[in-house]
Amino acid sequence: MAPPIDYDMLRLIWWALMGVLLIGFALTDGFDLGVASLLPFVAKDDAERRMVINSIGATWEGNQVWFILGGGAIFAAWPFVYAVSFSGFYLAMFLVLAALILRPVGFKYRSKRPDPAWRARWDWALFIGGFVPALVFGVAVGNVLTGIPFRLDSDLRSFYEGTLLGLFHPFSLVAGLLSVAMLVLHGASWLAIKIERGAVHDRAKVFGQVAAVAAILLFALGGVMVATTGMGFRLDHGVDPAGPSNPLMSGTVAAAGAWLDNYGRYPWMLIAPLLGFAGPALALLGIRSGREALAFGGSAIGTLGIISTVGLSMFPFILPSSIDPASSLTVWNASSSHVTLFIMLLVTLVFLPIVLLYTAWVYKVLFGRITMKDVGANPDFY
Image 1 (cartoon, rainbow, N blue to C red):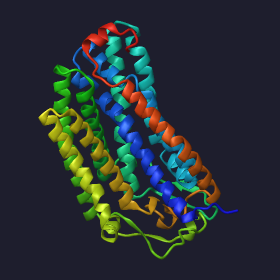
Image 2: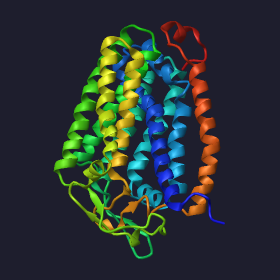
Image 3: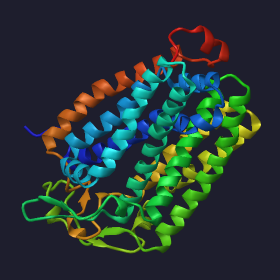
């Protein structure tokens, strides 16, 4: 018996859920990456750096689960996307994972010895574990927007024809720097509400203001580049949203300016880029006026808007091909089967609310500012 939800609707639901998981990762582990990127600059001595580290020390592992969930969801719901992206971006993924491995090691080993040089090296390792993933994730998104150099043969085997250095071109670097600015702003806003007021708090606010302005300017620059450099892809004929998952059966062409099509077709989508600009502006206002909750809320809104802008601009594309547009992967041609998507949706409807409720409870229990006194007195701190 067929599932009670239509195949095209399930595909659309899972496209949206994939966006939810990516946004969830950016909103939670994103401020962890931002705080780690700021660590060597906002804290000048060992006590200050321990305070910064412990502002995320109790939650970073749980936040990282969103990254694992996102990878698992892509594997199960969009196997073609998983196969092409994880094989094509293998070296970039390896770079991200190598950087992320430094985080748990840095947290656990940094304070094992009192030697200042030992601790300084681990502080920079934590910086790398925050900055490199933030940059590479943005670079990857920039490459998705311009198209990935892959093709599929008649047996649906994928062949990637790019290089690691080829990923770093002007537009992808703008996207990478935007990602860094967005997450540094989120991290600075987190520090503003999580640590005691003082020197570190004030330095975080300064970096947050710079990151907010940078995020606005880089987001605007990225939009101008999308509109003027001719990037974009478009389906060249009608497709069956409930048709089989075979990328070679749907025609795609490269089309200058196509990433702007959806905003003319569905004007409500303009709310995404508006939030992308309004969020950092609100965060900047909150930081300057001393309203930390507004700053953190603004950075979260900006993150939501920027990521949503990418997804809505590209819909229904997920992974377009720059060398063979006919091989491009879309919402309609790259999903798992009807039954698989339905079973996964049932599981998600049960467990995702549990995850969200547990996460909310954890943050409620851990609510409160970290102080220098806590750093000196709490034996459980890093």
